[in-house]
Image 1: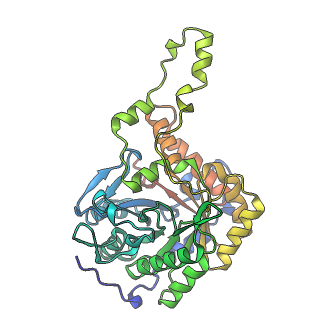
Image 2: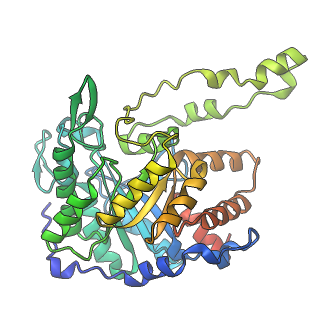
Image 3: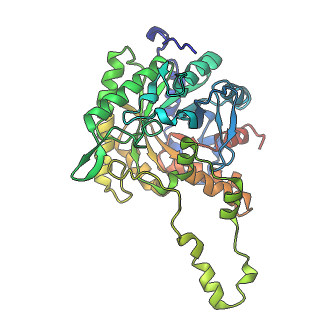
Length: 404
C-alpha cells in the first residue's frame, strides 16, 4: 500500500463556515431550559467519534461489545458507513481514533512509532500504515469539504507502555518526559495534517504541548490547521468502554448481559434482605479489567477552578483555537466557568461511559432516550458548550431530521 503525502497547498483549511457557526452559536442565547433541541443546536454542533482499525480487511465492520451501537471500521467500510449519515442526515464532523489490531501489537514501542507510521516495517513482514492516515486520505477523497475531519492526537493506542506520551521515572513515579513527548506528539500532528486532517485534537494531557505543536504545524506549512485542545481532561472512570474499543479488548455479549442483570425485587422477601440488596453489593467488587494509571498527567476531579482556568488560558495563549471538557455530565460547572474565561469556542465530550449510562437505561425502559438527550443537550448549551462530541450523534441527527 503506497500513501503519498498531500501537498500542503491542497490542505488549506476549508471549513470556515462550520467554524464560524461555532462562534456564532455560542449559547448565550439559550435562556430558557425549555428551549428545544432544534432551536438551540444544529447538525454543525455535533461531532461523531469513529474508530478506524489497521486490520488488513479494509471492509471490516466489527461491533464494539463494550460500546453497544458503535463499531470498528476498515478504511473502505468507514466511507460506506458515513455516506448516508453525510448525505441524508447532514453529518458535518467526525473525530478519528486509530485501533491497533492484534497482529500488530508486537510493533508497539515506547515512542509510539505506529502513531504516524507510513510504510513502516512490521514484525509481520508487511508494511504498516497508520489507520488514521489511511482514513484521512480516503475520507477526504470521498467527502471533500462536506465533512470536517478531526484527528485525535495521542500515543496511548500505539505505545508499548499504554501511556499517552513517552514515559520516564521521576522520584519513583512514572510520568511523561515532557520534551520528548512534545516532540513526538508534534510529529504525529504534522503527519495527520499532511494526510488531510482539518483539525488537530491533542488528547494526551501532557502539559505544555500546545505551543510546540502549533509551532510545528506552522513550520510545516499548516498555519490554517487549528488545534482543538482537550484542555480539561480528567482522570476519570467514565472512559472504560472507550479503552476497550481502542485496545481491541472485547467484552463478550454474555458477560455484558451478566453485568446488566438486575436483581429480582421479589427475592428481597424481608426488610433485611432488601437493605442488603439496596447497597448493590455486586458493584462493590473491583472491576477485573486493569487500565493504566494516568493520574500523573490527567486532571484530578478535585482540581481547583483557579488551576483549571490557568490551564485553559495557557492552551489558548499557546495556540488552541478550541478547547473542550471531558467527561461532561459531572463537570457542567467547569464547562460554564471555562466558557466565561476564554473567547474561543468551548466543547464537551460525552464519553463512552456516559453514553452507556443512557444507552442501558433506555434499553431497560428506565428512561426515554430521545427526551433525555433533549434535556442533556440543552444543559450542555446552557453551560456554555458550542460543540458536542457524542456517540449519539447519528441518533440526534436523525431526530433533528424528524425521522426519530
